[in-house]
Every structure is written in C-alpha cells, then in structure tokens.
Amino acid sequence: MTRRDALSRVSLILGGTIVGAELFLNGCGPSVPQVSATEFTAGTISFLDEVGEIIIPTSASSPGAKAAKIGEFMKTIVTECYEAKNQKIFFEGIGKLNEAAKAKSGGKTFLEMEPEAQKALLTEIDVEAKAYAKENVANPEAPKHYFALMKQLTLWGYFSSEVGATQALRYVEAPGPYKGCIPYTKGEKAWAL
Image (cartoon, rainbow, N blue to C red; front, side, top):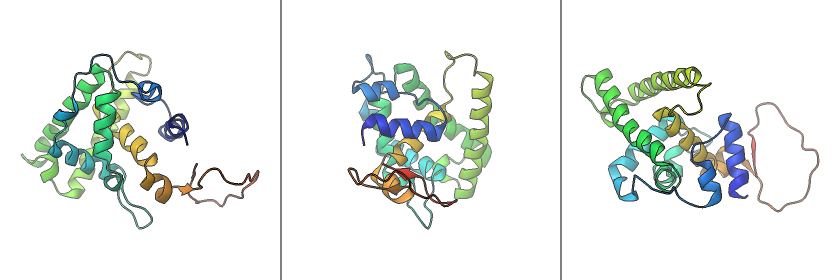
C-alpha cells in the first residue's frame, strides 16, 4: 500500500481532509518548523498515547491506539508535516486539555483523572470541536480545533499502522489473486489493502 492509498482510506474514514496530508504525501516538511521533535518529551508522548487510547480503546478483537504507538506517530507528523500555525494549535491544545481536566476534576491533570472521567471530558471536547467546525464550515481559513487535530492523527495513525490494519481491519497482503466479487456479510470488518 502506498502512502497515498493509506491516506486516502483514512480520509474516507474521517469524512474529509487531513491536516498535514499534503506535506506528508510530498515527503517534505514545513518550510519553517516551529516545533522540534525534542519538544515532544516522554511525558507528552505518554499523554498523547492516553488520549489516543480513549479515542480508539483496546477491545476483545483488537488492540487500541496505545499499541500502535500513536504518540510517536503524532510527534512525527506534527514536527515534520504540520505548518507552523497547526503545530502551535496542537501544542496549545495539550495545555487546553489539561486546563479543562483541572476545571472539571477540581485540580487533577488529564492523566490523574479516572478513565471514565477522561472519556467523559474527551466526549465533551469532541462535541465542542464538532460545533466549532460547523460554525466555521464556510471559512476555510479558520484555525482548526486542537481536538480535531488530535482525533484525526489518532485515526490516521491507528488505521495506517500494522496493528490497526491487520487486527482492527481485515488485511490481505498484496499482491494477491484478483477476486472481482467478494461477498459481504453485514457487520464484517472493512478491508485494509
């Protein structure tokens, strides 16, 4: 599978465009990076792993986002593919998420909260991000919501990882024989090629 095919499929899952995708596909970084890879500390990557795990949790049939090392994936894409304005939004978003956690839990950071409280907080922020996107649908120049960036990266990274493609999706190693018509039973996993 090429990067373009993987990105195209993830874009279909997300229902639109992915921030940073053009630079990723072209294989080059932003012209003036604002965030270096060293700014992603082990704590930041652990934080992003936890956020990703709530978005795509481990289930009986497949591992979650943490198994796909989603924090490392986010580090790579944000530092090498995001433009400066989106890098800034992403990093400020980590702080905003922790501020929201402290306001909601009486002073606890996101990682100090109970898992159910973390999930409830992210659900609220997701609703906020969707409302923000709806308000700004006519303005393509409007900055992205930080949680939308985190969620996009989680989905993109997970479903393009080995774990996501082979265990969460049905995977057929290519090249393989051509099968023009494959029966589909409702409820089956989608295909990853």
